[in-house]
Length: 217
Image (tube, rainbow, N blue to C red; front, side, top):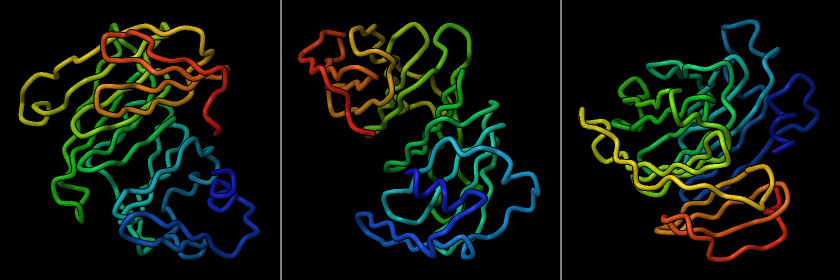
C-alpha cells in the first residue's frame, strides 16, 4: 500500500504497478491515470486505496471527502453523490457494494450498472448515536464497521436501497485488542484486529478466541 501511495503521490519513482485480482489484471503508471481537473487534488493526502474484485475499478480516498474513481483504462469517473465528510479513511468494494468509511458516517453504494457509476445508489448512516470510526468489511448484504466507544456495528442492507429500513444485525463492544484497525466479516463471525491483539467474535458479542498479535498491515 505504501508503494501505491507513492505511485499516486507527488514524487513517484517506479514506472508501473501491477495488481492481480480474481478476474483481471490492472497495470497502472502515473501517466496512465487521467489527470483530475481539480488542481488541488495532489495536495490532499491519500487515506485509502481499493480495487474492485472484478478489476474494473480503482478507488482513491483522500482528505476533504475526495474520492477518485478510475476505470480499468485509467479514465476518471464521478459517483452520483460525494461522501459527506472531510476524510475517506477506508473503502471496501465487494460484490454489488462499495462501502466507504467517512467518519462519523458510513456510506454504501449499490452497483446497479457496473460500467456506469452514475446509476449507483447510495445509503448513509447518520452521525447520531453510532458514529463510524474505524474498521470496515462486507460479506454479501452485511456490512460491519467500528463505531465510537470500542464497539462494532453490523447492518443488513437487503432492503436499504428499496426504500425500506436498515436491519441492525449486531452491535457489541470489544476489549483487549487496543485500537481497532481492521475488521474481517465472514458468515456469522467477526475478526477484529487492533494495535495490540486479534480477537474473533460471534454476532452476539461473545469472544471465541483471542491472539496477542495483530494482523500485519
